[in-house]
Length: 77
Image (cartoon, rainbow, N blue to C red; front, side, top):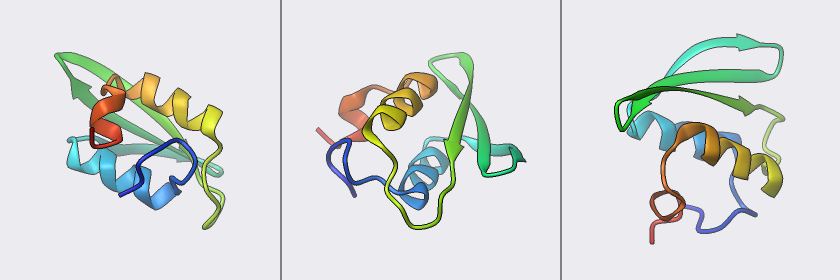
């Protein structure tokens, strides 16, 4: 599993979200919207899909904030 902001792909993010009980809500063009609960609150996370390219670090930070899951859990620390 990736360990920092620079090497996450769409498939890595989706598999991590699914392991944390998020599910696909809907898609809009190349953006996939996942919904799930974290610490009692409902969260909606937008994940862009651009093939096998890695997700940009700034976008990855936004995904982490939207999910509400701590960075330490994302990076396995």
